[in-house]
Image 1 (cartoon, rainbow, N blue to C red):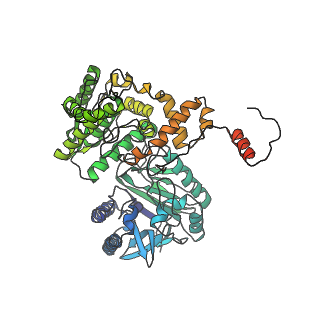
Image 2: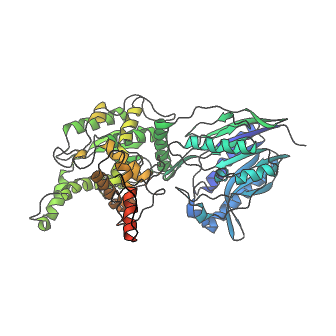
Image 3: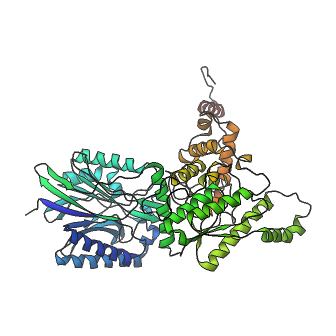
Length: 577
C-alpha cells in the first residue's frame, strides 16, 4: 500500500571528478545522515558518482567499470531497509553509454536515462553520451516518481511523457553551472514544467567548482501550484530534509528549509571564491602565490584567495622595478597588511637588466619599445613560477576579461599561473566587486571583515607601470567604453554597425574587434578561470586562432546594396542613409 507521507533528503553536495571512491563514501555518509533525519529517500545531483562534467573521462571503460561497481555496492547496502537512494553515473548498456540516474532500494537497481543531451555553451554531452528513450516513472514504495535529468526539463517532451504515464511528482537531478542571471532562468523553466504537468517539482543542483565551472547549488522546490515550498542555500553544501504529504490533489511539500540566495554582484564574488577554493583544494595545492602590484586586479585576487583559503595559505610578492611608484608600493603593503598574508618585496632590476645585457648584441641600434616592457613582466612571471616550484604553491594570474579580450597582457609573463579567479570579469566589474568586498563578504569566507582593498587602489588610474607615467588609457579606450564594446562583440555577437549605433566611434570599435581576434592565441595559452558571464573565453567561445575575418562596420542596408551590386541586381527605391 502506497504511503501518504514521504520524507526526501536532498543532498546538495560537492563531489570531485574522477574520485569515485570518495564520491561513493560521500554518498554513503549522506545516506547515514538521511537515516538519522528519518528520510525514506535521499536524492543526489546529476552524475554524482563520477562528478560533473567528467568530459571524455566517461568514455574510458575502466572508469565506467569503477562507477558501476560503486553503484552496485551502494545498492547492496540498501538491503538494510533504510533510505532508498537516487544517484547519477555514466552507465553502459551494450554499445551505448548513457547519462544515467539510478534508484537504489532494498538491494535493487532501477535505471533511467537522460533524453535531451545539451550541446551548446559549456555543454558537450552529445560527444560523450547516447540519448535515452522517453522514460516512464520509477516506482518507489508504491509512489510513481518522474525523473527528468537536468536538460530534460528545458524542453517539455520528457515531463509530458512522465505526466502521461502516471508520475506523481518530479525529482530533477542537475549539474547546472552558474552564470549571472541563471537563478531566474531555472525558476522560469521549472515553473513552466510544473504549470504544464500539474506536478510538484524538486530541482536539486550540484555545488562546487570544476575547472572553469562553478555549480552554485541553490536547489529549490515548487508545489503543483508553482508556489515556492523550499529553497536551499547557494554556494554551500547541505543535506536538507523535506516532508511531503499526499492529499486529494496529489503531493504537497509541507516542510522544507527556506534560505535567501545571494544574487547579482554578491553571487559573482561568491562564485569566484568557491571556484578558486575548489581548484586549489581539489588539485591538492598547499596554497597560492601571486604578484601584488598595488593595482586593483591583483588586490581583488588576493582578497578572493584569502576568502577562499585563509591568509595562511596566501603569499603575496611585490616585484618592483624603476617604474613602480611609491604609491603602488604603499598600496600593495597596505592591502597585504589588511588581508593578513605573508608579503615579500623582491626587486627585479637585476634579472631585467641581465636580460637586456644578454640581448644587447642583437638589439644594438634598435629603439626601446614594448619588447623591453615585456621583459619586466616576464622577469616577474619567472620569479613567481620559481617560488611556486620551490614551495609548491600555485601561481595565481590576475588579468581581467577586458585585458584578456584585447591582449593587454604579456604571454609567459603576467599571464603565468595555474588559475585566474577574475578571468571572466570585465575591468569595471572588478572595481565594483572590490568596493563590494570592502563592505561585505560571502558566507564561509575566511578573510577578515571590513576594508581589505585600500581606497586609493579603488580611485587611482589603472597602470601596468612598465614605463614612465604609463596609464592603461594611453593605448585603450576608457574602460567604461571598452567593456560595453566587448560585451557587444563577445557576449552578444553584435555587428560592428550595431555597436556603433549605440554611440561608439566606428574606428574604435573596429580596433577593439581587431585586438580581440589577434589575441586569441594568447587566450588559448592562458590559465583557466571562473565562468561568471553567459559567455566566457574557452568553453563558451571557440574562435579560430588563424582568422582573417574583420567586420567592416557596414550597416545592414549597405550590405544588402553591395550584395545586389555583386549579383548584378539593381536596387529600386530611395534609401535614407
